[in-house]
Image (cartoon, rainbow, N blue to C red; front, side):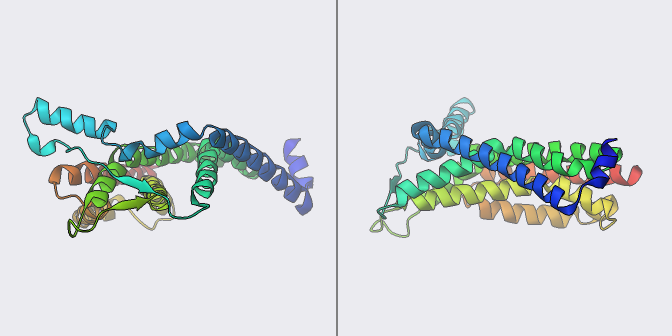
Length: 264
């Protein structure tokens, strides 16, 4: 009965349903963005925490340095001053950051609404496949964001914000630069963690195979090390490994995923 109703729906009926979906999504995003906007102190306490010398990552490194007698791991106390140089900048950053927070918090609902719109056009097997893909893709993206927040961005920020070509040049980082770098790295890491999902689709299209990924494993590791060195321009090997190991594990996971696609 439901299939017959779907067949009877015209193009304008589908367009109307899509309009309702976008309306519900916009309503959820705006509501959560307003909540984030109102809770300004909490929102920016979270976002600005990685630039504080007592951030959890730095405390962890200092504890490791004490436990294993490795003074090279200790993080020296540092202070970076964030400034604002435009009249409307802080208010606009408050608004845009609240909007980003609203989108992030509403993302499960957004996926649910969009999937609900397209699912009637899918067969039962296709629906199950989509669910199997969407949930890991969503979780991997969030893991990438969390890795950036707790590891990559703090290390990158500390190195770049305290780097000086001369003692005569004092670093004062603008708030807009901080927020844009934080957002860009979060999106990059979230996207990088989608490697297994991308590999799955490429395997479905028969564009790659497990044998091909294994053949170019060494090249991939070199590329990962280069990418990790760019993302975290610090001078110690320990930090480089902290970034490159998760990416290398994702590559290995991609090989497993591609092999399972072929075996089905």
